[in-house]
Every structure is written in C-alpha cells, then in structure tokens.
Length: 99
Image 1 (tube, helix red, strand yellow):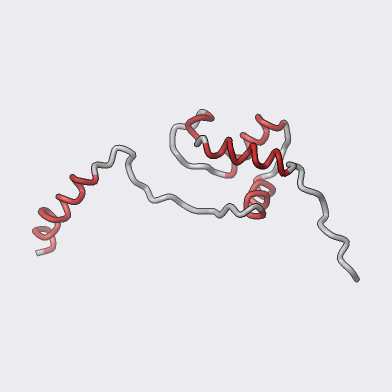
Image 2: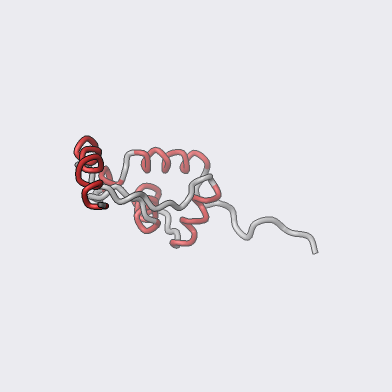
C-alpha cells in the first residue's frame, strides 16, 4: 500500500500562520491573559478569534509542532525579581544557612 498523503490539509494557510505567529509574539497580555504563558487552549482561542476556525487542543499542538514550535515550561520567576538582591542573598545569607 502506498501512502496517499496526509488525511487533511492544514486549515491555516502559510500567510495565516505567519499572522498567528505575529499575534503570539505580542504575548498573552495583549490578548487579555495576565500571566506570560501561552497554553494550547489560549492559542486555540486566539485562532478562533482571529481566523474564525475551530481546532482541537491536539490539533493546535500538531499545528505548532509542525511549524517548529516546542512545548516548554517557563522557569517560575517573579517579573519583579531583583537580580542584585538575589545575588546578594546568595553571597551573604546562603553560606550562613549551609554552615
């Protein structure tokens, strides 16, 4: 048996996917979410709002992976993090706590 190709064609065109990447680059806050993480349900919502298309969560994952995106979990750090204060803590407080 010879493959007859994919079961279905991508529903977003290359031009639309480029527009989606532009929207994702703006960040979740630009689309109404407070934290700075893109989740598959959020990307699905953006696709629905912007292109009036419905994808499943797995369909969104496959769309993103096919075009070079990867699933990553960001390091949990406060946006207000003071790097100087953290460095000072490691130099002064941490050695006393270890000893």
